[in-house]
Image (cartoon, rainbow, N blue to C red):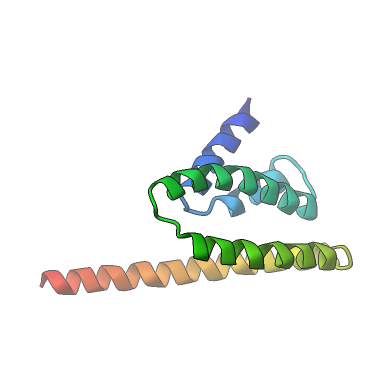
Length: 126
């Protein structure tokens, strides 16, 4: 039951575009004892299903434009296949390191943007 609740919450977060994929990998590795590669693959499949569900809503609201979507699909599929092929020949610690580094870098960039937006908003009020 707990797995269903966690999966639903993460699907909602992903559907909102907040980026819950990292949380799902952490949940799978720490709580479910999945290996890193299996957790990342499961996360990709999970994101595919929840992302497609959210995509229909975004298309209906016309917040996604077809040319950009086609470009993303056309470039992502080959890159994913290449990444999966490379992962077969690498030490599992390497994807773990890069995922962690990506999460840290994304967090830092997001934090910097938030602080800049806060300072800009504060200066505009004065």
